[in-house]
Image (cartoon, rainbow, N blue to C red; front, side, top):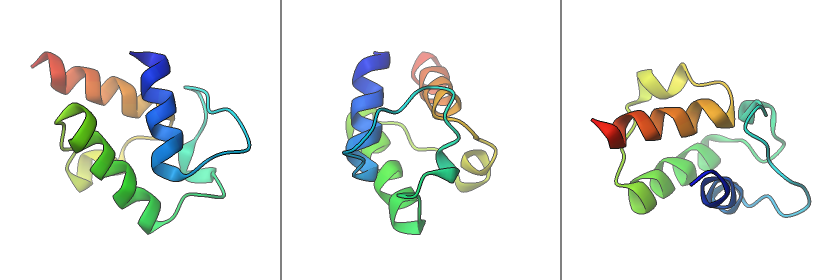
Length: 76
């Protein structure tokens, strides 16, 4: 699931020129913006049927944090 998630994350933010790692702080990406956030939230809903509320999303710092949150919500 990790590799698929990283690819979907990159696609959602339209990152083409580099790899994305789980320990990357996604809010520091040049591609991160309010539109990027909406794209990421839409991808999570479409690919994983997971909706992360704004307050919960604001606590997430790294790409890995987002993946863990998705996994937690899929398990419950």
